[in-house]
Length: 284
Image (cartoon, rainbow, N blue to C red; front, side):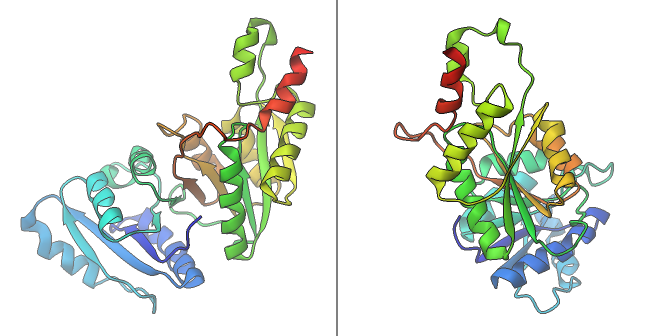
C-alpha cells in the first residue's frame, strides 16, 4: 500500500457525513495527509452555494483544500482522484431518502470499482467502538490475489500502530454437486483443516506473522461475526478484479466498524495460489 499523502473526502451536510468526519481528521493526522473536501453540485449555477458550504466547514488544524465540482458524483470523484493524485478516498456508506445520491451504497461500490485507490468507508459513518484503531482484520479468500491483500493490510496496520488478524469463511458446499474441474477452480477450502493449511502457506509466503481466525458459513455473515467477536477496529477487504463482490456491501453494513476496500488487482501468471495445497488434498 502506497503512502497516504492526500485524502479525498466527498462531503455533504448529512448525518452520515457529520458522523464520519472525525475519522477523516483522525486518519489525516495519523498520516500527516492533506484532505481534499469535495462537494458536488448539479450545475455551474450552484457553484457559489457549494463554495459557501465548504467555507463554513472546520477542519480542526488539518490541512484542507476544498473543491467544488459539478455533475455526477461518481464521475467527479474519479476525476479528482486522478487530478489530485489521491491516495485514499474516505466516504460513508448508507442510503438515505433525501441525500440518496450521496450515501447510497452503490456509490461506494462504483468508486471502489472505478478508482484505483483504497476506499475507507463505514456504514452510516459510525466509527469503531473503541475510537482508536488497535486491531486491523483482513478478510481473505484463498485466491492468489489474497497474498497482495494481506501485504497491503499488514502495511496499513503497521502505519496505524495496530495488530493484524486474518479472517476467513469456509462456505458450506455440497461436494457431491461439484465436478473435479470445479474443485480446481474454487478460491476456497471445503473444511477448516484445508483452510488452515492454505492460510498457513499464505502467511508464510507473505512473510506476515498474524493470527488466523476461521469459521464455517457464508462470508457475509461469518466475517462481520469474527470482526465483532475479536474486537477488530478496522476491516480490510479486496474490491475484486472486475466488480465489487456481492458479499462486500452486506459485510460493510454488519461489521459495525470502518472498512477499507483495497483496489482491484490483476492476476499474473506467476501469482502463487495459496489454495493449491489445501484443495489438492480433497482429490486424493
